[in-house]
Amino acid sequence: MKSISESISKVDIVEDIQQKFPSKRIRTGIEGLDGLIEGGFLKGEVILLAGNTGSGKTIFSIEFIYNGAVQFGEKGVYATFEEDERTLKRNMAKFGFDLDKLERDGMIKVVSLESMKGAGLNANIDFILSAIKNLQAERLVIDSLTAFLSANQEKFEYRTLMHIFYKVLKNLNCTTIMTCSVPTGYKTLGLGIEEFIADAVLTLESITRKEELKTRFLIRKMRGTNHSKKYHEVIIDEKIGLKIVPFSMV
Image 1 (cartoon, helix red, strand yellow):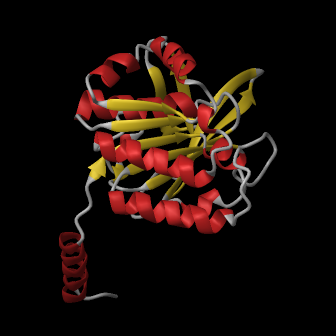
Image 2: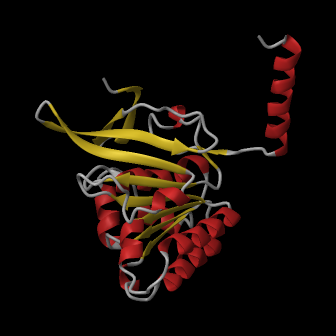
Image 3: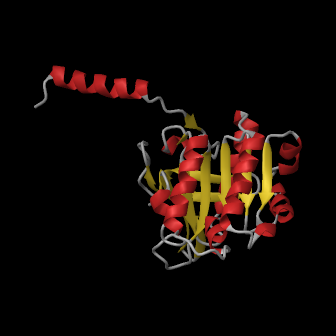
C-alpha cells in the first residue's frame, strides 16, 4: 500500500508537469461533445473524423468552424474537396449556418480544392497553408482527406508526406479536423495510414436499429485526454444541427 507521502509526491509531479506544459482546450461548441473530452480538443491537435457516407462528417466539421467563429471568436479555414463551395454553403444554410456572412466579416475562409485537382499534393498543401496564414486561423478542416490524397497523380509515400504535413500543422498550432470516408464493411480508415498520424480518431457510424437508420459516435483515441470510451447516439436536425447524446447507447 502506498504511503501518504508517496501519493502527495506523485500529485506534485503531475502538477509540475502540467505547469511546465500548459494545455489549452479548444471548445467545439458541438452539443454534447465537449463534456466527453475534458472541455474540448487540445489546442494544435490533428483530429481524424472517420465515417461512412451520410454519417454527418461535414456538418460536424462545419459546426467546429462555425462555432469557433461565432461563439469563441476564433478564425477558421474550411477546405472542401468533395463538395463545391456554393453547394456547401447552400446545404449548411438549411441548418442556420450563414457562412457567407462569416466570410465577409473575415472570421472564416471556405476554400474549394475542386478546381485544383491534378495540381499536385504540394500545391494543395501550400494553398491551404497560405489560407491559414493569411487569415491567421486557429482552426482548420480538410473535407475530405481521402479525396485530397486520392485525387493526386503523384507517386509518393503517403505516410512520409502526411507526417510532414502533420508537423507543419503542429508548428502552426492550428487545431485541425480531417474527415475520412470509410466504405461500409471496411476495417481500415481511408487509405489505411491516416489514423497513425492523428492525435485523435473519432468515428461516426450509420447503423440500422429497429428498422431505422441511426448514427452513433465513438472516440477511438485522443492523446492526453480522459475521454468517453463508449458509443453515443447522434441526432442531426435542421433546428439543432448535430447533437451528441452524452449518455452512452444501450
